[in-house]
Image (cartoon, rainbow, N blue to C red; front, side, top):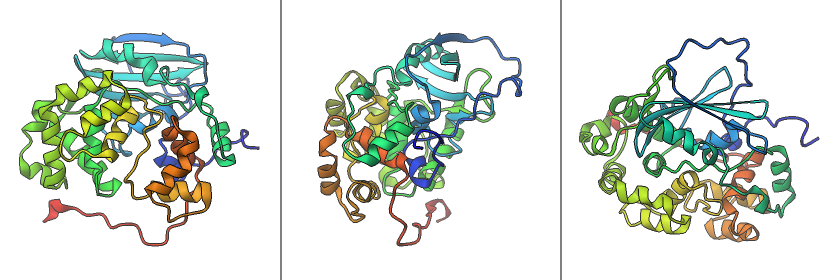
Length: 337
């Protein structure tokens, strides 16, 4: 029965990086006439699940840089090494079609296979627990994305430090919409490319405050964008070395660096430590221990050495998580102070 029906999304599976992408309905949802852009078609030798692969790149349902549309496509607005670009990805009949606009269009299309998991090797993963094996069986399209972009994953990860996801998503949404630039081409309404490094550095202190970002997180981002070039060079490093370089910036620790390289490098072993919920979820799923800490989590994931991040994602996607024992953390808004 495990493979017959798609599991219903839960709070845990959504956190595991799953975005509901509608089935291709292009026959019933006509597309408007669009300005010509660059195109690329690619036929991967594996099943493609755009929602699973690209889901971790979305920072909340209102992310200005990410959109899943009713015609079954995923849109992304990115700041590439050669400029802003918009990418539309669709998959039909096993064929992936990419369309891109803007100065970064050629770069985005060149990166398309790796963004959809071409650099990943899921066959290297061997389930050691029944729950993990079932989750893998139910999600045959799971591959780890590799964007090749550091800052676009680093900045929202810094915003997520020590706050609720709602607060972090709101800050990202407000800052990108106000200080970014409209996505090139015929992108869906209100899509934006994140600001360039110099623009981040020039955001006034009161705008950080209005977005609900405290001085500690804002200062970390400002320190990071001052050395943006050196941080982007980390794409050419192994994930461990890349994390070490990121952590040279004060305010960036193991949690933030892992969350970054999971997306920029497709790092299969960079498990997130220092997370408020993940140890308890992993502990509960694998050992019935909802009070597990980082050391217990790492011990439980030891059989998956080299693939610990993939194992953690499959656990999250399984939907098995302990019930809440306390009310949800209240959302704060320092912008009201």
